[in-house]
Amino acid sequence: MSHVPRTRTVVGCTLLVIALGAGVTACGSDDNPLSATPYDAADLISFKGLTANGKKVDPDKPLEVTAEDDDGRITDVTAIDAAGRYLAGELSADGGRWHSTTPLAANAHYTVRVSTEDEDGAPGRRVLSFDTGKPHGKKRLKVTFGPKAGTYGVGQPITAELSMPVKDKAQRAVIESALRVDSMPAASGAWHWVDDKELHYRPQEYWPAHATIQVRSNLDGIKISDRLWGGKVKPLKISTGDRVIAVTDASSHSMAVHKNGEVIKQIPVTTGKPGFETRNGVKVVLGKEYFVRMRGTSIGIAEGSAESYDLPVYYATRVTWSGEYVHAAPWSVGSQGSANVSHGCTGMSTDNAAWFFKTVREGDVVEVVNSLGHTMESFGNGFGDWNLGWDKWRMGSALAAGTPNAPLPEERARLRPQSV
Image (cartoon, rainbow, N blue to C red; front, side, top):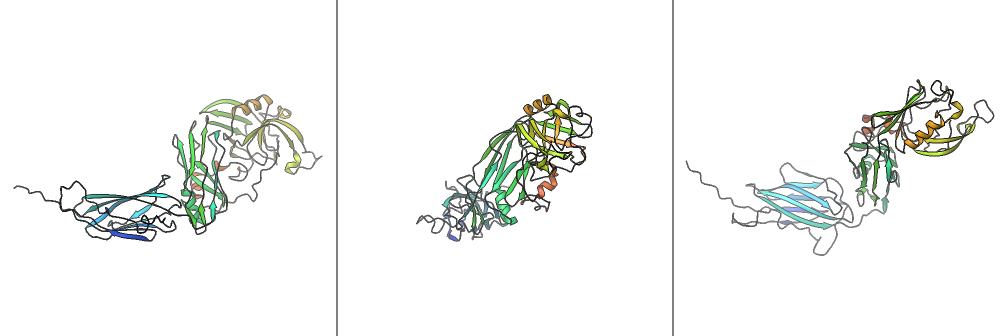
């Protein structure tokens, strides 16, 4: 039995494209199936009043594409602005309608690619462009990324400081979705809202060694609320060095320093004595100070009491803002490796402290185990971010299951040195 091929007749369809409330209908057809011009259901799409008079569209309204002819359907819509930001959207199951699900950016130039097909599956495509106008709100949200550009240890979190507080979860989600962190080698992570004005980003595990981390924002011109729009944000690029992790066992009075998975030095130490126990958990090096004068009065010890002290301290590596350091303690060498006699810091000989000071960098990890002290605060006293399990960390994302009601310190002031 012979088969007679069916001659395809291209059938036009009508699409209605509504950009921020403005739209017209368009159609196209061609009776010649061998025509060099493919079927294009979107061939005559235009935005009413947007190009003829140069008027810019209102960024406060959604973008919509609608197929009004039963003979054709939309197969895909891609909208992207000049900054490379894609406009998210949803296409109905029948291909009759596509609409944006995220806000348009203000003061942006968009390119929209509409793909279609007719009832016989013949494809068509149309590329359109338009500009959006100025945002209606006067307030601009600024974001400052941290730390400063440079090389850090694998425990360094990324911070994002907002210029004004944001409490609403939907508004937080808009902000968070615009903050991008890319790592090479790749390391998947998540943002966590520390409070109404600060977010931290960290991977599930520590950053890879010798990684390049780039942080940027797509928030510029994006509507956050009726009166608040995103502003320009300076991007950040940092790198990580070797994987350096120092683990102090308070019960055995010893610190093991690991570099890229190998122990490179064992150091006898002393940690906090009863009543001044060193915090357990993971801390991150905040900075290094060659000389610090430490006084007992800074932690409430009365001057002249048995516990009072006023000492010059050298090779001090800070791990909390409240004054916990790893430092030289020549006065306690006899107890190092055998007893805990400090007021909360980790003390070691001057030679060992000098070696540690030169070996570690900001962002390296210092962990304390088997101390009778409480666990390092997650936020507010340095970077205790790693003390939150990954599931709980993700709960602090506005894009995940919500922000936990975990207690946060009432004050986040950077305090002067306290303990020795």
